[in-house]
Length: 242
Image (cartoon, rainbow, N blue to C red):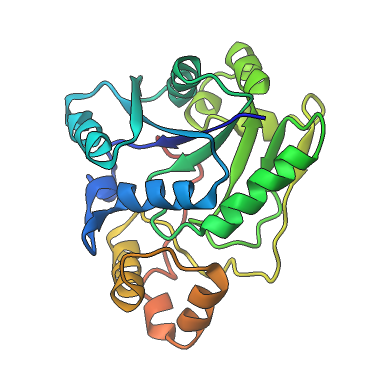
């Protein structure tokens, strides 16, 4: 099974504009996501799906610096953006990443890929259906043919969120939730607000420019509740543009 990793990334963000290219210990937020995806060994090829907006010329320039392929498509129709990336880089399945997850754990990514490959006929896998992971560490995989089927069915917000039509219609698709205890949903490790940035900066200041296993990171955060408090009050938006 050939697995394509697609990272959705754009400079436009209502709460933290330009977040995907913020510098972190000599890298960028996007650069850390690219590295984690590569380190996982789960994907055969990696492409960044960005937009045709002029502001995202900077994303393309960063992709060139990182040596990663890119595809440009619509701002709001993220599903079309993913399908364009898939058409340009054919594969049997797509692993979806977002560029605002600089603390992604490659081992969790690898596990998601292995489980998807091990279950015959699976359409979609996600760690967020019965969430135990912190936000910012989730893994999603969708079969390429299923993604193309969604193009004929998905409308409105389902085209923004790419995979949401599949997991909200389990009567039509074979969906698997990957649950990874213990429950660490009290941690927020994504990057969407200035408060999130404070936590990410603190983590990177401690661990440097390298991927950190979740268990090790959770242990450190448990010993530093003042860091967890930076963004503990932040509420996740129900749906966001990619």
